Picture: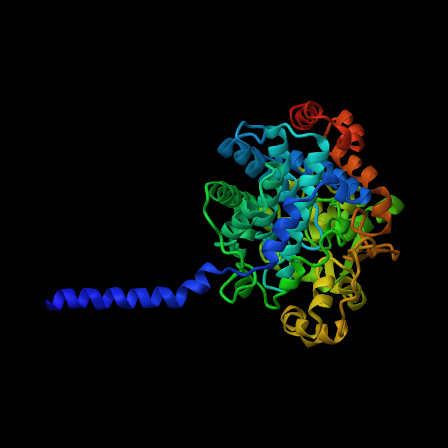
Length: 519
């Protein structure tokens, strides 16, 4: 026997031995991973499984996000996006879904929940595929709820991590996969593989690009396109890792400071994250909503102000609002400021609202953005931390409270990284209490004080912004989102019929979507 033959046999034997040792681990995937449990539940979700209140919230969510998409379409940057990638009402639903997602997200007029800015994918993708697949209204709403639940749960599992709010773009990998596959009525194993493939290379935005360039337009466009590829790949038979979320080399290991894998499948069918929806009534980032609400109240009392009338404006808010505002302030310096930072800025929208009585997407473009009076007044706005508001923020469910309760004492490192030892002491120890989210709140409050040159002082405060999760929104969400839709020029016939969306037949749904975007 030659040395070459002997060497080949030894090598073959070593390979066979290695295969025998490793085959059991490779061929025996986890029997009940969180991703598998979530996939099987969502794939089999039917309208009759969903409480009526949740379906009604989903209908409002659809109209609210359509309003956000319309607003994005009207902005100059939105028109450039359409020039590059086509109108959202295009033939290929995969491309349409990506454009829908991008247009609805970057002005921060998109709806949020615990956890994540869901609607950019969980509404955008079902809209595109319900239109293409000619689904009825109840099927559209069920797909939205399925997508909400998948995206919110996976986002919740990494909420105590370095990415939050719109920077947590991995939300849309889950929302887009779930939104499409529910419309396609795909089997559960296809869901599992598509989610596993989508999370193989999750997106991580760079804050410099996010705040200082037009790249913010891609914060949902890119993950939705990735998700569409993952769905196509899974349909063709490619497999994803079923334990990609919780594995030591998986998603949470990289994206969570305090991993919460148990959040992925907790309370399926009884604990609806859709109940935690907050509807955005003004464009802008964390805490801007309450501050703008307060400024509008002050404007109604004082009437139009001039910059010379105002000595100082103090906005007191939670640590979350200050954190986002301080990062944005580095990039905001007058009319030429990048939009990615401007939508997170607090002084400009507060000043604008005090001067005009309202704040809308038009205020992010010329000629409004060039008004020197707004910038003069904005320079008189000062942000201060209100510890009571920070405490209330963490006692509410969204955006962090439920995650901190779920983590218990393990949340301490994340809290310390976010706000130092003072925040750890302020929040204390919160424990999971099994709440079902039907009475969810989002307390991103603000207090605005205007000190006038004539000696008068006017103060207004609000703990839960108009449209945010809370008692008022649970009662009036349909009315609120209709107002939002009409404010961006949406046809009244679309707003007036959203309450009948669940009864619309396929042809009616197509006409309703066309009327919303092609008027």
